[in-house]
Image (cartoon, rainbow, N blue to C red; front, side, top):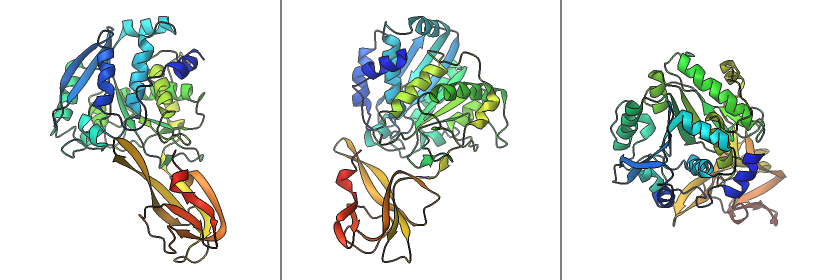
Length: 387
């Protein structure tokens, strides 16, 4: 409860929302220059600085990086929550001191500042950095690889974000997911994978207190072009973090808290599981599935389909004037019983109009969905769904 109470009053409020860029984190890096060793690791393809934060002085060396994909910013917020936590002098001081004494954490808070600025997955050259571990065609990829080779970490934390489409077979959304990446096509459980799996088991046990049955296990298909898989090939334990969706949390302000708790847990600060996790329990964590839509309007009728159908709406994220706007699109129409939704609306078999039109086309931007025979019955209005 100490951590929960501290977090509710002290999370890094200077960072919020989905759009996090260098302009947002630079003042915080300046703020912490006397607390930690902060240096410029290098520059991006478009010349933006990529910073490195060195924390602690212990023998165990941990490498962590965030926002490798520029539009996956939730874990960056959690990193600065973490920096604020280990800088405070009130809560869990013995555990923080022990962490700093026994570990050295090398932290890249924003590997892809060009993609962060444009709110895109790829970097300034339109390259997915997480498919560049072999080619090393980009400056950012080379910087990460050189850092890995120079510090020779004992553990890597690869911090990402996942879309709202991911859920679990229980019907719950995958609010946080983890992965111990494969190191070969056979997906063998190697010694380094076992270490990562054991740590994931500990984080899962801790998170169950906060978001029970909302933690998933990400697909471990092997791809040597991905940095996590490549580093695991080098026999270094790697943990992939995926920050997902919590109900009505489209700004990922709640999810950032659970990633923060996960970071404390994996780093041995304040976790409730003191014994080493059994790696075999990793496989009992349910696998992620693409079984979610943002909104489903169930049991309606439309002109182009016979019988009862459901309409799925998915939000597309667009950067407009420095803010991320959620654009509702018709994503799928039909029998959607195999999907869950973050919000479900019951149409009771009524005929509906989409944007005053009888025809419904996939990809249409939706402003309003109403009952054809009674316009006062509104099933969806974009102005009422601004989470």
